[in-house]
Amino acid sequence: MIKVLGFVFFLVINGIFSVSSQEIVTAERYLAQVSEQYGKIRDYEARIAIRSGGSNMVGTVIHLVPSFMRIDFSSPANQVIVFNEDQLTIYLPEYQAVLNQSVASNRRAQGANLATAQGLTLLRRNYIPVYVTGPTPQSLDSANSSEMVVKLRLTRRSVSEGFRELILSINDNTKLIRRIEGRTIDDRLVQFDFSNVRINQGIPELRFIYDAPASANVYNNFLFRDTD
Image (cartoon, rainbow, N blue to C red; front, side, top):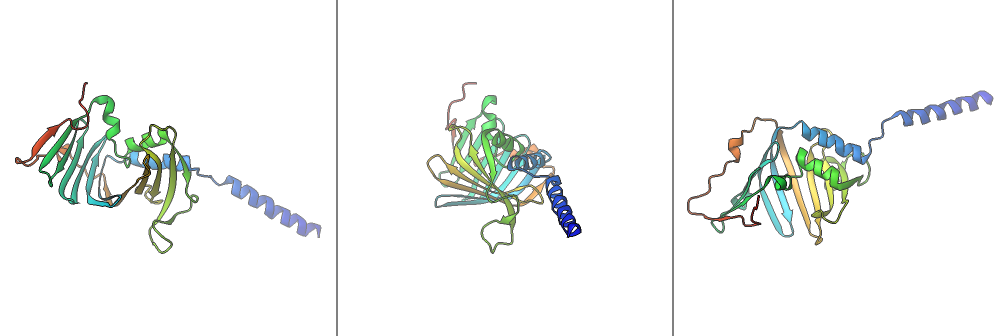
């Protein structure tokens, strides 16, 4: 009997130490790992789908560090958004209009996309992460989905942030963001999906130069007037 109890005690103690010796990856540490992965990326190209209310937009996004970004939309067809660190340009083919906004050096961080090393640095600074259900990968959309992700819920540290809450769905193998769901301060849901991601292809800065149609009307500093 004593030998049996001793053996059971050994199994229990061994199990306790086995569990405690495993690294527990907190949500904060997991977000740091994702940020570290994006820190290794110089450029990427991906298919992007944006949903906001009843609006659906689809296109191709390219990014080059530190904060070059361009989206060429297939829906709405021919619409373009380009950010080249100094200027934000939006082409609206429906209105034959080009909207330009100069961006001062103290505002450039605001142009960073969330799915970049710079964007993730801002998220870690301004939001508190927790697991939605835990560190184990789960289905992206439903129990029947074969695409598995780790989901983090991020809540803002201050009321100055544009999103009250963000949910990041992350591919556990690549540590790349598959989906971003944001809840705005007016309780509107905005969703960004990234798929077919290709990294470090050597995208040149020339890809972020946009030549607008000659027939388009140009409107400068449509958001605010740059005083710097």
